[in-house]
Length: 271
Image (cartoon, rainbow, N blue to C red; front, side, top):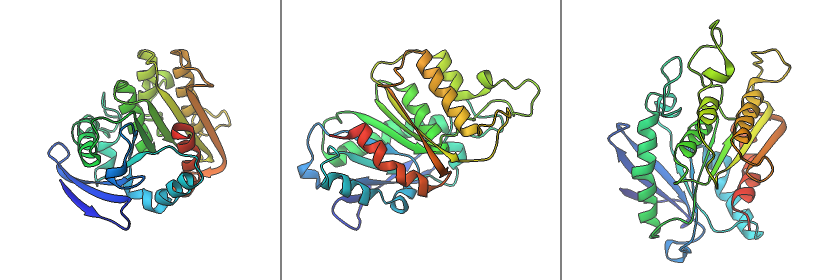
């Protein structure tokens, strides 16, 4: 494990070698102070597509929330995506109808067996108080899949513009059935209620233009609402366990997701 000091003493970079993914993976750490001052009961937030976080201004968002007393101390770990992002992100149970997501199970094991222990060792804590996972687009699907499949490890999922359309049959297939072939919705429908899990969903009204069922609602919003309905059917309280934010004019891009970051952080980790 190599450590590189970045712009300030609050941002550090870890580089991990993954045999499973066959690449070196950069993980950027955002700490609320130096390692020696971290509280022992601090939570950890893992973030997919960590390479986007500088552009999204995460450091500035954190500084602002801390300065206003709105955020409890938190360790953020941004995991950089690789060239095979569409293979590493997805659902571990199965690839989609084009074979994308074939490395998702390996990525999950990398996160659990290498990323979390490495961040824990760097922060010199025996264990994190709680762990969450944040992602956007395909990274949100990955975060949701990992949290849902490992409820003893995680308590929060932050899901911006999630690719919850991910499916085992093409939508043009005559046999396509939304409630059977959308992989994440089916996982939830066939799963069980896990006490303590909470979910933050965001969609922009201009995330896309696709409307496969011609109901006047774009697919990303439909897919997200259907996934929320599946969670509610399992026993999750739509007021206490689930937060849904629909952003008027919001687009499928980092500019929109950056604006949503503070709201998610305060909801999940606010004082």
